[in-house]
Length: 317
Image (cartoon, rainbow, N blue to C red; front, side, top):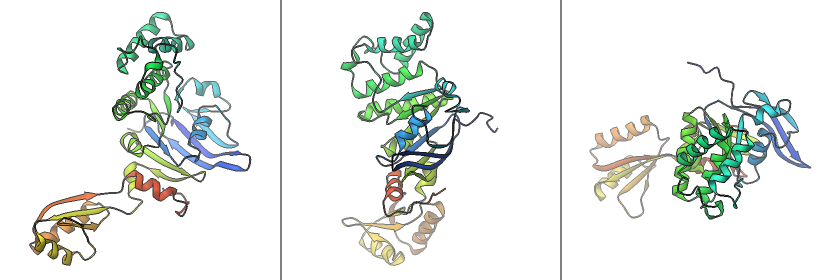
């Protein structure tokens, strides 16, 4: 059934400059409600500027911007009531305990005392911070601070959360915890707008990904759609012996042999048709292969291809 919810974010012709430096040059984006949208781009591409405009912290020079169905200029208060922001730099007070930080945020949101206590207790449990609740935030690890910062954001019950580099400085275990939290939020209907330099993070979490470069969106699609934009897929054949390797090399002259093993790498789009063709050819030729595997480009490959200065800059949809 088609959703009747307004998009979480709608951008049309978004422009922003600082003096002569154009940061955003006509950005168009639509983010469906209840999804994770990842905005990728090199340092200085305008990711944080985009978040600041969407969260009403700065104004765009031109363009239409709607968040949770509200215009960010004419209805800024309504937008602020719908969003939460967890930035690159934590809003946590180091001199207060984790629990005190949460209670302070509850008071800022004017929550009744009983409701605030129940919600704080729930968030401490949900974010695995119960044992650290009475410790000052200065003693927290990077991952714990990020979790506390996100928990503080949720005290306002936002329908849309901006996560600007949420796992910077977080160890691998802490990153996995935050990923699980994000997945849980989306399952509850919250929309997430994510900026990150960890491309694996975007691949794991995002329903859609856009790449921002040179002030423009140069690609927009699902992670798998973006991976198909760049070459680099391959089928890897592991052969039983040297004779099988020689036979396979003759059968597939485009293949590249492994340096120190009995393997052959065949360029491929990673699709089922190409894989079946290789399997059928190997079987018909009576070549003994011990294993076969398929690799495709990852988002790192996509990012490098689309943000290289020599790469094309026209949008890819």
